[in-house]
Image (tube, rainbow, N blue to C red; front, side, top):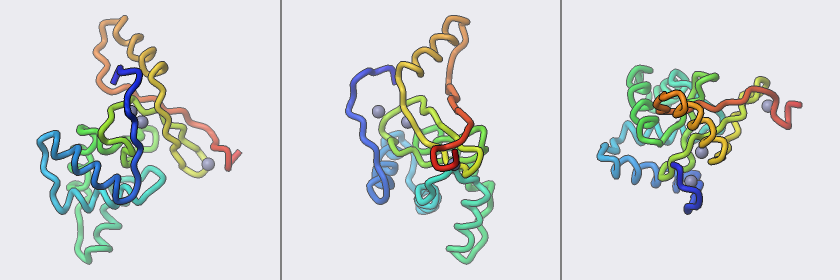
Length: 154
Ligand SMILES: [Zn+2]
Ligand SMILES: [Zn+2]
Ligand SMILES: [Zn+2]
């Protein structure tokens, strides 16, 4: 964060899962089979998905109940380690397509279809953090979300 020019790589599919596991292990956390299942399920979704939906889908796929609470705990670890992003206004999660690269991601959340388009803008991010710093407020995780209608729904 705060670096103006850097090599920014967006990942998807198997390459995203591999990148996420690398990032989590590099952070000193374990990449367990359950964590891999939750991440893979999360990464399958293009729109923000709730912990309950992930738990339901995993339960169906495994033929055995996966508790939403254990999914929540894993998502917390993912968010803390930049593997997943929480879309606050949707109370849902997205796989972070750049797990090796920290940004204050900006989301454009469609009220109609639920799509959350993801944008990184370091100038906006710096300006928002500067507002907090000016008030001696320690910005941990700026939440930048714009609600409205996506192009397809307009
Ligand atoms: Zn980047
Ligand atoms: Zn981002
Ligand atoms: Zn839409």
